[in-house]
Amino acid sequence: MSDVAKGFWAVIAACLIWGLSSIYYKFLDAVPPIEVLAHRTLWSMVFFGIILALKGRLGEVRAALSARSGRGALLIFAAALAISLNWFIFIWSVQSGFAVQASLGYYILPIVSVVLGRLVFGEALRPVQWAAVLLAALAVGVLTLGLGVAPWISLVLAFSFGAYGVIKRGVTAGPMVSVFTEVLMLSPIALTVLLGFHFGWWGTSPAVGVFGTDWQMTALLVFSGVLTGMPLLLFSYAAQRVRLATLGQVQYLNPTVQLVVAAFLFKEPVTIWHVIALGLIWCALALYSSVSLRQHRAEPRPPAALGGNSPG
Image 1 (cartoon, one colour):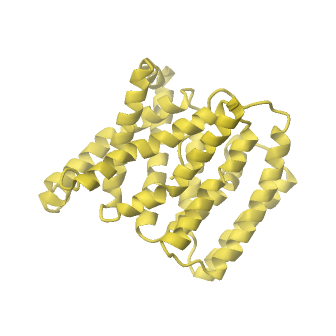
Image 2 (cartoon, one colour):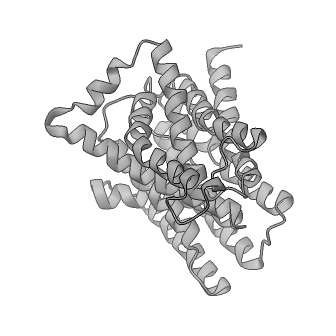
Image 3 (cartoon, rainbow, N blue to C red):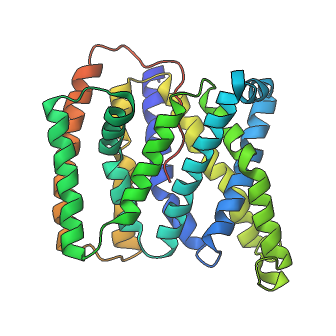
């Protein structure tokens, strides 16, 4: 199998893991979302720490955190806050029966990223891209009108991950190192949250913490580190072997799988307003993708490593 084919199947696997991850978080719906998030943070730190140690790259962490004037550390901390908000809202939405809205958030993410690129970096938008933005905005309007409330979950997920991408553009460290430093910075907060659950600091009984009380739930919580880290490793592997345009197109598999799981496995309602909004979003993505494909048609392959993290 060629390197390009291996990269293609790696990104397929990564997107399938991200798309199916909602099933995992549904299994943990008896655990408070903030507790799940704290475990995800800590066990992700352990996972990435082991990988970096085996590769002899832990020294890169110090370099990332000791950037001139502390700017690098500040950017990494800001990125950590953005991705933590994204993780928390995704976990909460799945556990609370709003997985359809979560999938819509990742559908509109590329359009949000285009808007943020315009607002933050002054990136020029072509007429076709403006049309995609308007269609996505119309989809949000349709949902707001039809459901009687704005799709806040979708918007927060899209803008938090979009902001994460904006911040990561200023981080020079590679994806694995930067994600490790992000969860490392947040680990004291995560540990405090977990200790509070286990010792009743939050006004609850001391036995409310799940970890260690049930081996199945404990194993699932520990697995959150692998679930977070493995698709990122697969995606980084693919990013070195396939074109950026291919990566962009295949990533739509993630929210599609999320939507299928939400509708058919979780039995969440998909109203006519969702269908109309999805149609508008898919048209917007088709316009966006047409520009992306033209821009990257001449590129033989993407850069050796990409920043970023797993959605959801």
